[in-house]
Length: 506
Ligand SMILES: [Zn+2]
Image (cartoon, rainbow, N blue to C red; front, side, top):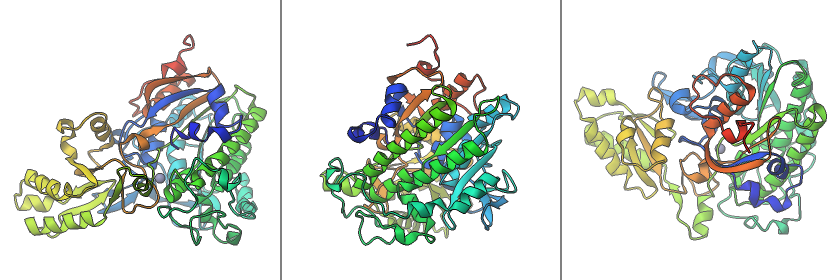
């Protein structure tokens, strides 16, 4: 979610959703992600650890692992198996090197607090819930079940089994995805059919209505790119609150919910599509219902709620070009060309070991056998890649500190670079350039369109208001620690947001 969605679609938001957050809550209007790459796993980890990839080791959704010689998923864990569906290798938070705020709550109460993570994406549930979590649940597209792993438990709780048996997705699929209001009233978005939107789920073109009825009992993955992925997540979250009696005991419990569909819809159709606008109009109504539910169950002011995003998003490069603004797509061939160039120039069979998160992992061992100066290789790589119109810069990650880069870019790259897990060169794209295709939209860069996120607090101990002071994503966990009177996570580098924590402040 990008921060500007709070305002751009406000004329059709309800009083109980985003407008309630802005009215009754405290909004940190200029919250920025303080590292790069701005991707899902790093975002969830930063929100819940108050820390950055340099320290947490969560440097991307996946990364090239030098020891294994292959790309690994951020939460993949070969030592655990899936619970709740037949299936093999499962997931756990073992790659996160820091404790989380949820872990700290567990420690502070000698594990009498419950902490639960819920999301469609595995990483968006597992990383927030923490290492010492009561549970983390995520969605399995293959059979439409919420699942977990043996890291947490040997069997799903009865309430989760009952939820899965109901197959609620089939009830969402009884209707196609139609716009909430007449389609001609979506004047804040482009017309429905643009060549830079992707087509998914067997649609003939990227237009409403998106057919869902055909997927009943068949294609549960299709729910991800519809607003009903949010409905599903809220429905399961309510079951978890009731199943675990969260907030019903003597100690503070923590429920971390991540809504993964806005991201999937943004990637597919882009933030200027009717699909994205409709998704947020619907999400606003879902939030309103969820807050009413929480009010009824716990009483207004008896729960603390905060909303933020693991990253924001760029406009589609196709959209920018259509409207005479600079953008483009970086051809996948650039790296193949570089690899061939290196082979020829230095007579090395496999000069590059891997590539992930816009970083190149070099096979320095083979260069060293031939006593080739790394600087010479660096000049060659820059010479090749900087010819590409979409590449703004190439920096050696080992010397980021002395690189001639402006802030905040330089600091964000340093915070995002983990010496044990990161690559040797960082490729920085031009603003609004995206890897691969002009279609759809993406995120991951240091630019503000990816880094500027919403952050609003509401409820327990929160006075209404806002600040325009620049606040970092890594400040969220220290603020929670201050409010809860518990220790910050082990890797935390953030500082509490004093506008929130100062009881005597205005
Ligand atoms: Zn994404």
